[in-house]
Image 1 (tube, rainbow, N blue to C red):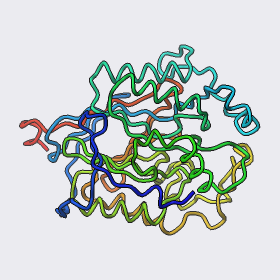
Image 2: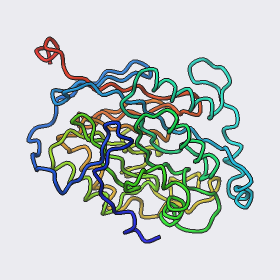
Image 3: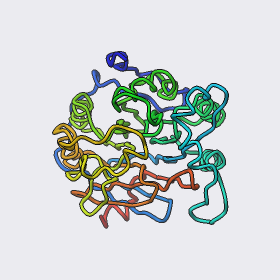
Amino acid sequence: MKRRSFFRRTTTALAGLGLTTSSRAHTINRAAKKPLKVCATIDQHKVFFYSEVIRESIKVVHIADTHLFKDDHRGIPYQEYSSRMAKAYNQTVHFQTGVETNPEEAFEQALEFAKEVNADVITLIGDIFSFPSEAAIEWVLAKLKEINIPYIYTAGNHDWHYEGMEGTMETLRDTWIEKRLLPLYQGNHPLMAAYDLKGVRFLAIDNSTYQISKEQLTFFKEEVATGIPLVLLIHIPMYAPGKKISFGCGNPNWGAATDPSFNIERRPKWPESGHTQTTLNFHKEVFDAPNLLGIFTGHIHRNSIELIKGKPQIVADDNASGGYLEIDFLPFTEKDRKLI
């Protein structure tokens, strides 16, 4: 795939519902001089973000790791590459109730919840699919059209991965984004895009290969330079001290020596040299960004929160087991403003 075909900028409203993609060429540089004051409160699947820069309430339903395996006759030629993941999540147990469920049911319940709470946007942050099945992708697109709520999508490491298929992770990602996943991006850049909603800019950056490209790093730095309040959406969590290797983006311990799963997943082994300097630089830029409100992610199928340099990173439970996050970005009340 020619990577330049991804580079598009648009200011078209998404479905006419208030979520727009930003055009950085017209953004005034008003970089924040001091870090934003943020108060984050978490109660099970509910997350509350308060900040002095939030002027209007924003409700987000955050979904990751649904692992849909729906397929049809079109997937038969790819069964040698999809067979393991097609069986991985056929039946799951709800993480709260212990009742049996499955990825389709869990996804529909999350969308129905988004409708009930009148969400402003749904964030679909990777591994919505266990492999790039045409049937599953079409099913999700139909469900999203039916629910009629703006959404943001970025890929996870399984969304584009047919296990055992030859090629580098970057090449395979490009191939299956172009062949299957492209409609989910709604005309926006699949590897990096900015979405504006009520004065907050949501950045969807694809780190599904565990690495960050030079273009993505430049994109992030330019967005930080605007001074606009930012929320970062990535599939693989940013490294935090004390966390396992699955917190792989910017992890100094990441590399061939700590890659136990490449044989099972039938993919190239992580490089002997570990992360590129660009990826490590991205980690630093993220946690140094004065206008970053927080980071929302998935991948590890387990809810957690890390606080790095005052920046909260919140990981969602897997949607395959019924998990999702209800996130409210809220202005401070006058009483809280005085207290904070």
